[in-house]
Length: 339
Image (tube, rainbow, N blue to C red):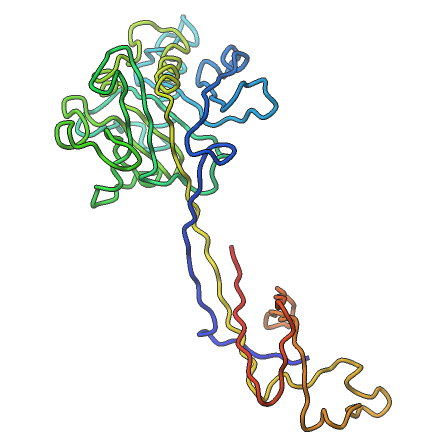
């Protein structure tokens, strides 16, 4: 067996980004919005609501995303214990996302130029994507009872296509949610896509597949804001669910970066022309069986093995067809390893 040592220039690493649709069955727009009364009535229903693409009792039902509501001061949900007021699912949710996104229990959420004490959460289910969400692919239409210029509907997207500087938090990249569709920002709203008085419509966090919506900005455009006075579990995320299902348009793609290691294997004219196959050499004398193979040998390589310095086989590359090799020919084979 012949070995050739690979040189550093024989290795090239390349990365490609692959995008695809997010929802089940590779649909661009989520075809329907369904919830489970069992989940909502259970203990988890105090904290969040799962949304399916079909009836939750259907065998094909899969969780697409979950919605929740967080409030710094515990409003919007019932207390865990009336004897110890101030602690509720909404406050727990707020604290969880504050630690996850901001990494500081004393930090505040700043939507645009406005500090908010509460937010809606849309968390994409982990099985829906491989690496992250694709900035610029978001279209989320909300409907409300207050009729506006778009028939009582508000279309939201992220500002990744117009921002010149990426902002990072403990949760990775962060983009502002603005009025628009599929990355195209509507400039007719105060010329920058959101209400300055209420702040931006929220944050788009592609690296943790999360959307945080600013209730103050949304409720100023549509009547879908949270009930801050009634501590009733489920009211706030149920209001958001009604706004999303009524809008009927939720489009979002995912992206994945695939790194490929290209290894260039070179068989020069004077190399790999003889075989160690027993049919090539006489077993009794060790001579080449056919005299014409002495000065004019031919081989047909079919497989390339990649070994470490201890001659341990690490990977095998199969050629699509055997290659004719002799002293008049050289071969260059590119091996691609995806990881």
